[in-house]
Length: 91
Image 1 (tube, rainbow, N blue to C red):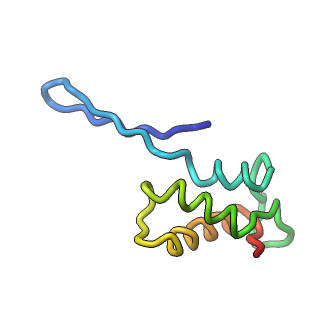
Image 2: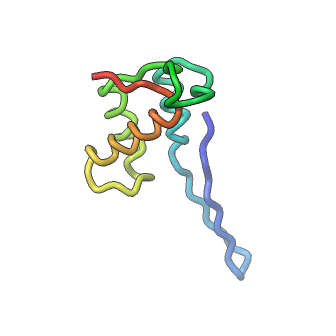
């Protein structure tokens, strides 16, 4: 599971690091059961499907990293990422 990390180094040689949630594409591929998204999203068939329940679960996990106020707006962001990967959102 890839985990993005932000490392900040200060002038006095001290540092801080912040661990983020895995990328949204990782969660979407795992939920759809595919290894990669579509080669040409929006130009034909879908690479896989994700349900509305799976989208909500992903949105809840990614909420701290997203620029969203409500879970519904976070779900729309997840749905947009799914469509750009060539995944169909059903339900």
